[in-house]
Length: 266
Image (cartoon, rainbow, N blue to C red; front, side, top):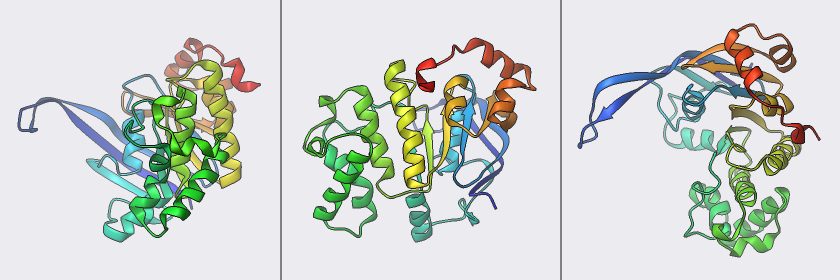
């Protein structure tokens, strides 16, 4: 049984809203009848150009966005039917790493408050215990525990992304959506983050949906690749099969248009 299974997911957004937040006018289908399975322990790379629906799909899997139709099951549980305590338990197992390491961290909070926030929300541990776990998680992502007392503006983009990763790991999730986590970083820093994610996957037995517009980055990290175009999955397959013998013209276009990220392979 797959760890996560999405069936016929569809999401449509309105292109306009009035001052009361009510939608009107044209509507755009961001995700159109998408089905995808993810096995425990694997990394599925979700690739496609900007606006293809990748992030919308990733957020729907975590119920950060509600689908218009379709189904989602996580470890056999109906994610869309979950509510209350059942949904809270599911959220412990399903976390997200955001694209923007600058905008995703609250500048008014210390690193300790940011990293420990998930445990504070879900409860069950003292502040001292949370701080100990926060220090352990910072070390796991390559930062010193002295960072706990500092603020996000004191860190580089790569360090901020490490803080965001530490926050995502605090509840010891089983599944993480990594939403273009290196696209806002320099190539060399991004390669370090990709290698860190690979290391953490082994250490914490993680399952990833890794969203990216770069096939070379995904090739390095993913066991399978799903290619998305205009809200639809046009091709899904083993990484080397997709890279060496793509079936869809759009996949071939992506491969031809993306330079190799040689640093990530080192």
